[in-house]
Image 1 (tube, rainbow, N blue to C red):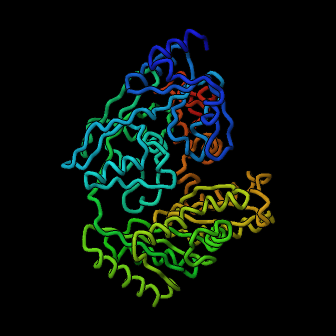
Image 2 (cartoon, rainbow, N blue to C red):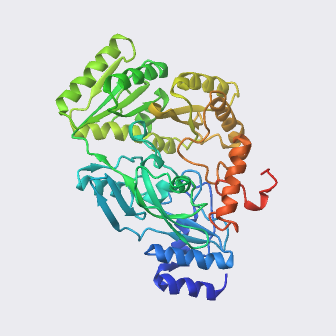
Image 3 (cartoon, helix red, strand yellow):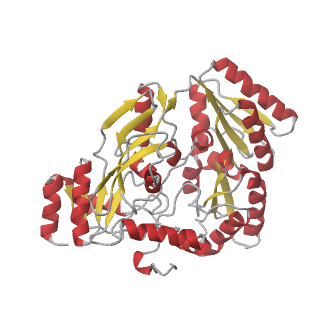
Length: 476
């Protein structure tokens, strides 16, 4: 990359918005889990869609790789630049609220805002933007859409793709696709916005989005219940779904191993029913708080009689509610304190969760590896995080990662599941997608990538195999 090229980029965004200093670049060259150490020529901070488009066009003319980066909170290395000539595009300066439409219940914003900030904007208009996950205060909306983020409210409100009414995207040649109208019904050809959500920056850079809003709940009730096992948790989930008529917004399961791990490693965290399987339940509505509380308590009483729960506590106030969520969200941090874990993000049909947990435990035990299974996650939508620690807490069993990961993924596949539920593919799971994905689906993805990014400059090496390995005759 020549000095003239950098001068061109500085002319587009301003000299102070082009970072080449190694110390400033360093945090952007490593992923959240510190599995990937990358390399880049510079970091660029454009302030508008026009500037992003001009930067990408300049890179396209010279065949320079471009990696878009938001909060850099992804868990599969999808935002880590890999080559020394890469331009990292940070859209964090793009924070304009373009339109709030309370009649259509949509919000159009630029994607440098954090997910939590988008939620705050919605709340100021008495609306709910329900995307919520552990890193939502840091993760940008652009990154969340690019990875089709999930989180704790998917059960009721869906994934990021379900919450997206349209996007504005800078394409690989610098042109801008504007699909921000936010229409609920629009059958004018292919649903292009949906293509870019979940593409991890390999097809375009999302600069703005129109997202769905919902009436803000006036009543939220949260509870934690101890359950005999995961099969009982599934039965309780079925009971709650039927009784609450769509008002069940979160149903999180934490295994006995995971809850005890939090209690031991993070003693300042209050953990209800530590050492037992437990579920965190949340229901919300626009109705009276007392009526919703009475409903949940009645269902829990029925569940206790049926043997689905052994104990339960309902949060009496917001502080208690926050404590319950803090205990649930603390599991990954506790795993770090215990020496780290091999992380797996799988989904299976809810009906297959109990068999999955049982078969996974049996298959891992058969390997004779030094493994403890920390399993937890979004049981209500079938998404579990199966994280493997050393039973002696001497660090993750990395030496046998391929074997152990294969065991977890094989069990999920046998039960009709997926090896990536919400974390995406990134760089970490590209090989798994090639090996395990449907051959026609993988080939179709490669063809879409080749059509929209023929020179392979957008986030090369993420999601799909390198374009040079793509064979247009029909194989990848």
